[in-house]
Image (cartoon, rainbow, N blue to C red; front, side, top):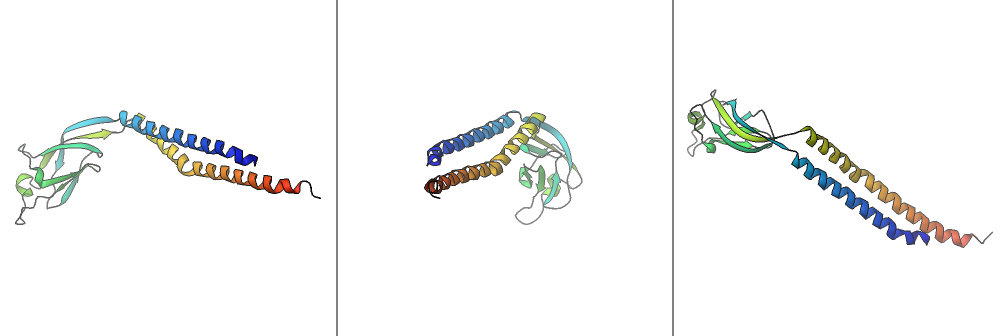
Amino acid sequence: MESLEKLPTYIITLVLIGIIVALGMVMLDKMSDSVDETVTITNESVTIPAGINQTVTLANDDLTTFDQLLNASATENDSLYSVALSTGTITFIGNTSDGTSEVGTTYPAGDTAYAYYDYDKETAAESAITSTNDSLSDITNTWLAIIVVIMIMTVLIGILVSTFGNGMVGRR
């Protein structure tokens, strides 16, 4: 029964380890966000593709904001395109209600348009912190579960040995 007396100590130890690892991961995540570098791009030129629902990929992905897409005359019609911020792609969607295209008048195929946006540039510090956080998540996903199982098995084996071992010591 000595193993049962140690059970609360094991449980408290496991809970404390879990709390420390979780706090470390939260701190690393917040630290990673604080070392982000937001870069503003002005006048990135893109060639407008021919046709409806055609896409253009910007030089950067992970956009935080997309401000505007100006044509050669410095005008914009944001109802004629959509932007996927995570991939940095612009899709030209400019159909009117009668099915004709407005893209050709505002953004003629083959012309150059100019994009204005902000994106998150990954710094060396952010990359290092993210790598450390990924390593910690491997520990919590794999090794912590194994440690918990080993500790539980140790307690159970201790209970079995103390229960059956005490009764058999005096017999021969």
